[in-house]
Length: 366
Ligand code: FAD
Image (cartoon, rainbow, N blue to C red):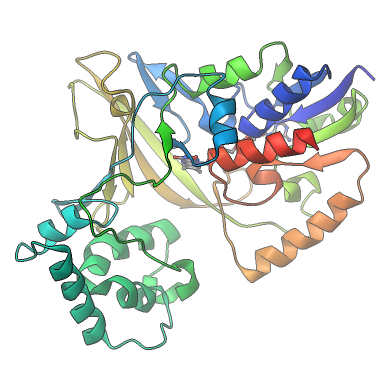
C-alpha cells in the first residue's frame, strides 16, 4: 500500500485529519470530487474581495484546543457577526436585544419595560401547550417579534407555513436584555485574514491532494491505495442509498458584482418578510472590513431550496425518520473494515467549523 490513509474530502475535516496524521509521520492522500480544496468553507477572490462561495462563514469557538490549533495556520481579524433584519424595509438589529426592542417599540426604554412588553403579548396569546412552531415562537417571544422577525424567514427556510412545522424545531429563542448585537457568545471569533482557502492550503502542505476525483467512481482502485479510508462524504450515497435517502435542506446562491463601494453597510442582512424570495444578502467585503476594490462590492443572495439527489446537501433534517435511517447506515458502516466516516456529511449532523475541527483532532489522536 502506498499510503497509510486515503482521505475522501478536502474540506475542513479532511484537511485537519490529514495534517495531524502527516505530522506524526503517516502518509496521506486526500481526494475531492470538486475542483478545489476547502469543501464548503471555500472562498475565492472577486475584485480582490474574499467571497465565501458556499454561504457566509464566521469562525467562533470557546474551545482553547481548537483556537490554538487553527491559529497555527492563519491569523484572524476581530470581526463579530452582527446581522441586521429587514422586514418590509424596517431595519432591526439581531440577535433579539435591547437595540431590537427599542426600535420595535419606541415607548420601551429599559430592559424591564421590554420584558413587560413581551410578557403581556405572551399572556394575551394564552398558549399553554404549543402545537406548532408558530405557537411555540409566540409563547417564547410574543407576537410582534414573531410576526416581524421569525415568521417569514422561517417559512422561507423550511418551505412550509409555521403552523405546519413542528414546535420542537425551536427549543429556545435567545433574548438579550443588553445592547449587544454580537451573534455569537464565544470568546474567540473572527475571519481568517488571508481567507479560508489559504488556511486549508496551509493545513494541506506536504500532503498529496488529487482534485476532481470521485471516490465512488473508482472505489476498488482507490481502496487499494491505502490501509485505511476516511470518508467525509454522505453515508447514504456511499452505500448507494440501500436504505433510502437521508434528507437535507439545500441552498442556492446568486452572486453579483456591483459598481458601488458599499451596498448595505453590513456583512449579513436577513430578509424576514415573505415579499423577498431570498432569506439573506451577504456583502462579502465587510467580513474583512472593506479589503479589495474600493469602488466595487460583491453580494450574494441566499435562497433556501428543496434537496434532491445531485443537489448540494446543506442542512440535515433532524426527525425520527432520518434518525432511524441514519442508524441503519451506521450499523452497516460499522461492519466495513478499515473505513471510518467523519465530518458533517459522514456523521449526518450540522456542525460548526470548530466542532468539525475538534472531531477531526480527536479522531486523529484516537
Ligand atoms: P465539507 O466541507 O462538506 O467537505 C466534504 C468534502 O467531501 C466536499 O468538498 C465534497 O466535495 C467531498 N466529497 C464528498 N463525497 C465525495 C466523494 N465521493 N469523492 C470525493 N470527494 C467527495 N460553521 C461555522 O463555524 N460558522 C459559520 O458561520 C458557518 N456558516 C455556515 C453556513 C452555511 C450555509 C452552512 C451550510 C454551513 C455553515 N457552517 C458554519 C458549517 C461549516 O460549513 C461546516 O462545519 C464545515 O464546512 C464542514 O466541513 P466538512 O469537512 O465536514 O464538510
